[in-house]
Image: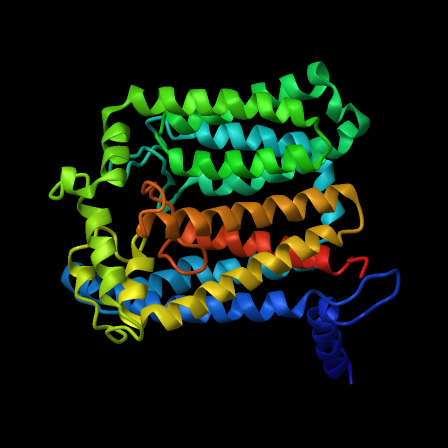
Length: 386
């Protein structure tokens, strides 16, 4: 009887988030669960197809990267997802300034020789023994948690330029400087879009937002002109034929892949361009997907992403208080903007910035933090006003 009772208690503990209880705490948004589950399943299929050739030649194991995604991404990500689902979102309010401090420290560690671990042209990885990860992926969530708590505490002071806007600009400039020095402009773009969306939703004056946007646009132009490779990337965006064997190679091969898919695609595993595309399992995976499954099924994938975005914004709209509204909005804007930036780069709507496609691309740190964030989003949905 004692063993049976313990088993029942364990089962009750595990199922508690899915059972309606008192005090206006209900079930999490099940549509969000289903969509994320489908995206993770499709992500493994697409990753297996996109990475098989590279995995075989590099490691003599066709499924090497799929195993890596499971062990370093999906499994720990789902564990953190469930933990976040159980933790009341108000818990994070206690650590508002700790989140900011952790963000700055993590971004600073990539410049310390004992921790830094470069990859490609970017110096945006750190290592602790055998553990290697991207601090910027953690900072996306940590900075959102900080802003949600800080903006919530400002209250009516949000319209005050001196006490809110100036400190916000200073904090954002510190984060931006550390990201630019790596350099990681793709992550900076995502954080900027997310932070400004939260800033405005928190009640800031639109004139202050306009001033920040104008200053940001000017800084962006200076940033592009300050580095020749960024200027070359913009030139390749407008005309890939300028340097088809160099900076224009990725966008040209991506466009060929997307165009080769036709209506129904070449078939899973039949992509020819994955042998030519840089990082076919990472940044370029959408181009491989479009080539293999075609326009019709790619449109269905985009519909899944759209449903995820809609549910995220709906959770933010129906959130029970200002803190949870800002937190849900920040998480949704982060993941939505990353989806858009990745796909837009593959179809020449904007320059390629080297950010992964959420739920799909190979990358343990990104997937773990994305699933943790979705867990927080699902927790907020349990307290929804509708």
